[in-house]
Image (cartoon, rainbow, N blue to C red; front, side, top):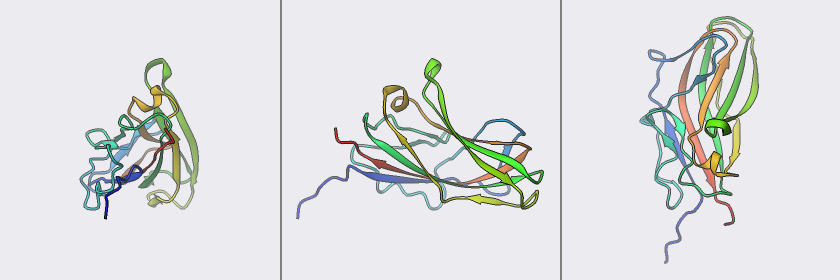
Length: 167
């Protein structure tokens, strides 16, 4: 039986954040979601062949620098947000590139209208980013939220799936 390296793969980076130490989300401020990668369910056993890391766990930034142009990543984030005011608008984005090439991929999650202090868990929506140029591939990717009114966020983690291009 011969071994074939897995060129596709994934990593699951779980954060140790708890309700005791949530991320503070100031009103109308893009706030980076941190991730220390040392949560109980972190799984780095299925990284693609030749890739040692997909996240800088000192910042929680996605690290695509070991990927190739033409590769893609699918990210499934799992976090819970608690707004301080009912009906607060929640936005989400990835900040990519660097310097004059800095850009954002942004979406509106929606209004959180089930009550203030009510936890809203967001865990099932995957996002797709492709490595179309060196500006995207050679720079870390920030994961950020913006809440219309202040609140707190507990990050469970992020799964990052790599799909290798045809190169």
